[in-house]
Amino acid sequence: MKITIIAMGSRGDIQPYVALGKGLKRIGHEVHMPVPEVFKQMVLDAGLIYTPVDGIDPQAFLRKSDLMEARSKSSESGFLIKMFKDMRSLMDLYYNQVWEACKNSDAIISAFLYLSAYDCAEKLGIPCIQSLLYPLYPTDEFPPIMIPPLKIKFFNRFLHILLGLGSWVLFRKNVNSFRKKVLNLKPYGFFGPFKKFGKDKFPVLFAYSSKIIPKPHDWLEKWKITGYWFNDDYEDFNPPDDLVDFINNGTKPVYIGFGSMTHENPEEKTKMIIDALKLSGQRGIISTGWAGFGNIELPDSVFLVNDIPHSWLFKNVAATVIHGGAGTTAASIRAGVPTIITPFLGDQFFWGRRVFELGVGPKPIMFTKLTAESLSKLIISAVTDEDMKLKAKDLGEKVNNENGVEEASNIIDSYVKSYYDKKKSIEVLKFSKVQRI
View (spheres, helix red, strand yellow):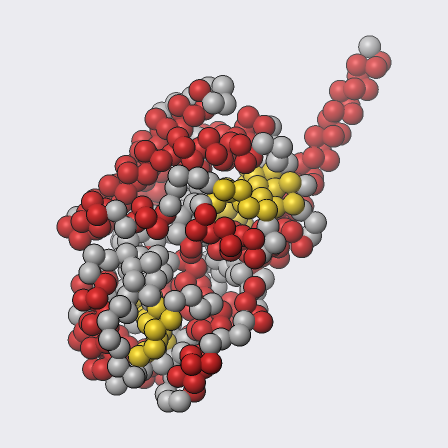
C-alpha cells in the first residue's frame, strides 16, 4: 500500500518519521515523504520516496532576523506566537503541495492536525493516523508540555483544551480556506477538527518510551505509546580518524550541541561554552548546528563536528549538553549518559524537567540564562554524580531494549489492512443486497 508521511519542522522533527517510514517499508509498504529539500538526502538514504516541498526552508525561516530578535526580547510564549503567525504565510503553499503528495495514497501518517493531512484523508476517504513525538493530548496528570507543572491537577485537562483551541485559532483561516477552496469540504466550526477527530477510530501513536512518560490513566485505549523511533542507518558509520583520535587520547569528552536552534551571536556563546569546559576541567566536542557554533579559534581540548550520528557519538562521551529537542533527548537517554538540557523553547522545557525528575540529568537552565559558571556546574554535576550516572545507564538499557519503530509499524499495518478488509466486506454486502433486489 502507498503510505504518505506528513511531518514538518527541524531535523529532529523529521528524522523519527524517516525511521518509521523505513519500518513500514520493511513490511512491504511504499512510503512517500514530502519534505523540504534540506531533508531530501535523509529520506533517500532511508530508501523512501522523496517528494519535494518547494518554497519552504525551515533553516532559513528560523534564521529570520525578526524571529531571532523576538527570541532574544520576548517571553517564550511571545516568541512561539510570533513564530506560528509567521508560519501562516507559508501554510497555503505547503497545504497545496501536501495535497498533491497525498493523492493516490492508501493511508496518511501525520505529525500534527494542522498540516492538512487530516483534511486530505477526509477528502480521499482514507485513514489518517496521527503520530506525535510528545504527549500532546489532554490528561489530568500533567499540563501541556509548554506549561510548568501545577499543584491543582483539575486545571491540567482544561489547559490542554485551551491550548488546543488557541492553536486552532492561529491556523483556522488557512485550514478552512484550504478545505473550502481546494478540497471542496465544509469548513470547521468553533472547535476546529477536534470534535470530528475525537469520534474517529484511527489509532494515535506517541513516539517515546513509557519508561520516560507512562501512559496517563485517563487516555483512550487507541492512544498508543510505542517507544522511540530511532533511525539506525548509521550502524556501519565510519567516523573520521581525527575524531576517533581525539576521543581516545584523554578522558571522555562532553558533547555540546543545540541542533537546529539558532542564536544571534554564536561566536559569543561558543566562547562561553569553552570557558565553561575550562572551568569544569573537561574536554569537549562542540557541534556547529544550524546556529554555526564553534566559528572561533578552539583550544586543543575542544573538537568541532558538523553532522555526526548521535547514535554513534553519544556512546563515546561522558555526558551531553543539548537543547532538549525530543529526538536529541531520546538519543542521549538511549546512550545511557547523563543529559544536561538547556532549553530554548517549546517542548524542550518539558523534556528538561522530565530528565531531571528521572534523575538522569541535572536541573535544566534556560539557554539564554546560561553563563560559563552555571554551565560548568551542570557539567561537573553530570560527570561526577555516580548515582546520576548509574540511573542514566540503567534507563538507557531499558530504552535500548524497546523497538518503537517495529511496534508502530505493526500497529499501522494491522489497522490499515483491517480498515480495507472491513471496507471491502461492506462493499460486498451492499453489492449482494443490490443483486437480490
